[in-house]
Length: 131
Figure 1 (cartoon, rainbow, N blue to C red):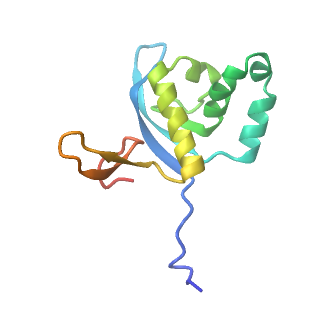
Figure 2: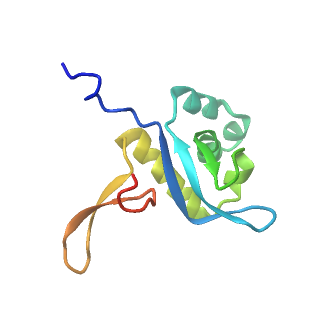
Figure 3: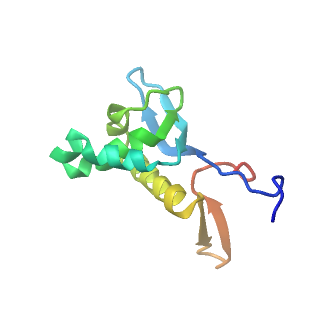
């Protein structure tokens, strides 16, 4: 049986860098953020949200707003913030959500189109060695 020192820590928060960034009402761009692991409650509450019942496509906005704990200096990440992200940033967050909640990590295997070498990249946008 492994000792307590050998037991890997459960990672519950994942820093990310948005491709474009959230532009706040003052015009400041916020790109760095944090997403936490989702709970069953996050998914259940999101499905019961009136906005989702009215338009099932809104589920992504509600769910992402529950698990993103910060974007730049914005700590109150609500549906209105997520609605105002660029489409590419929302797609990025949806992919990150899937990766951390289903795959358990933010790494992807890719192949260089020029040399055909395979390697791993951190799709959350952290610098090398920071994950």
